[in-house]
Each structure stands twice: as C-alpha cells, then as structure tokens.
Image 1 (cartoon, rainbow, N blue to C red):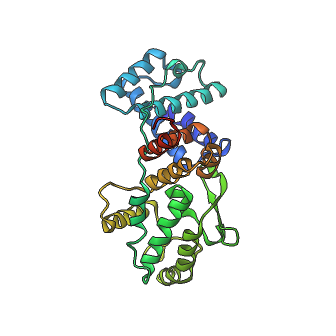
Image 2 (image 1 turned 180 degrees about the horizontal axis):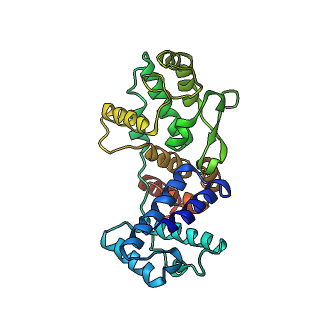
Image 3 (image 1 turned 60 degrees about the vertical axis):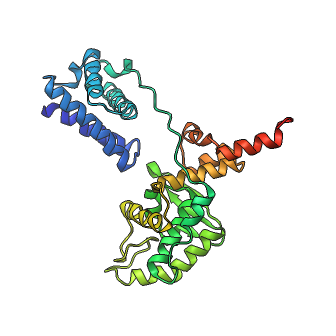
Length: 300
C-alpha cells in the first residue's frame, strides 16, 4: 500500500502550507484518513482511485457496528470528502465517492455550565499567600473572564497582556489571533501572580521564558496540567459536578448571553469562525426564563 502514502503526504503538506491549518486539525485529518486506509487494506483495495460509493457505504456500516458517535462519523466523512476533493484537483482520482455520503445528524447537547453561586465558591479556595495559590487564582479568574480555550491559555506570554487596556492577544485555532478583554478581578489576580508567584516559580526553571502560567518546576503549564489544577480546585470547593476548562468557557458564553450580550460579540470573543458554533449557547437558565415570564406576562 505504498502508493497510498504519497497522496496522503501531499495532502498533509497542502493542509500545512496552503490551508494553514493548526497542528491539532492536521493530526485529526491524518488519523481519519489512516483509518480509512486500514479499511482499504482489509477490503484489498490497492488505490484511492478504486474506491466506489459501495465501498464508502461499507466503511460507514463498519463504523456503525463499532458504535462510533454520530459526531465522530460526521468528522470522518468530512475529512475524507476534503481529501478526495484534493485528489480530484491533483488528478489522482476521477470522482469523489464521499460526495454522496450524507452526514449523520449531530446530537444536540446543551453545554454544561455553572450557575453564579457554584462559580463563586471556586474563587475562594486558593491560598493567595503561596505561589501556587496565586497562579491557580489567576488561572481560574482568567478562564472565566475571557472564555479562552485551554490550549490558548497555555500559549499566553507576558508580552501578550496589555494591562493599560485590560486585553490579551490570544493565539487561536488556525493561527488566528484576536484581542480579548478581561475584568478587574482577573486583572488583580494576574498582577499579583506576575509580581510575586510567577517570579517564585520561574526561579526553579532551568531557562528563563515569557510564558504566563508555569508549573511547580517553572516550566510552561500544559493543557493537562490546567485540567489537574481545576480538579484540585473543584475538590477543595466541594462541588459535586465535574468541571473542565471547557465548562468555564461554556459558563462564560452562557452568562454573557443571559445578561443581554449579542451573539456576534460572543462569537468574536470565543474565536468561533461560524455563528452556528455560538448558537449552541442560546439556551438560558430556568431562573432567567421564569424572571422574564414574571416581569412580562400580564397575568403572571
């Protein structure tokens, strides 16, 4: 199957150079296509040009038998459809067998978020007299204040922060950049951490660097490290539900919309390329629905 590796490598180069996709996105594309290549091996299909729509249906049946989530199947179809469009452009195949494959309906899951009371308890468990406590406070304040992704949070450097106007330059997906504001609580926590806690942690590092959030060795914090820190904070706050960095992102978006922010603004702040990604946050809390009803219905 050596002849299938060359088109795949060319496609990866295309995604890197022409499309300027992020490393994570490229890894996902590569994994999906390699899974299809394994299917081709099992079915004794030697080349991408030999794949028919019947083979595609068999591949999708195989995914269904393995109980793959509809969201995962949809992504694989999209990846392979894009791959075949590239092969068509390069004249490696004569048709795109994935063009007829329909995407399964996505499961509409309401994002998990925290109510204000639950969130408030998270801000009172860190020991602000220690470097680690100052870091953790700055971390959770910033995640809620900005709604940034955990990967974006870990990439922040000191030079990205402008305290004069309380904004951060965030490096998002696909190497896109955006400025995100933060409030007074996050500003106070960040200034305390940078002035004191970060300096203490940085002394433990072998080399100096400008990354904002550091682990106990003074090295840049990783997304996994952020998740572990949140788990510790949740345990201290005695909150029963599991909280991930993405739950704080969901909470940020939900609270903004519930307080009257327009969707386009929230889309910009979250760094969503499409408004449809932001529309999932248009759910509102039962309390807000009840308050609106009580204040607006003539016979409430």
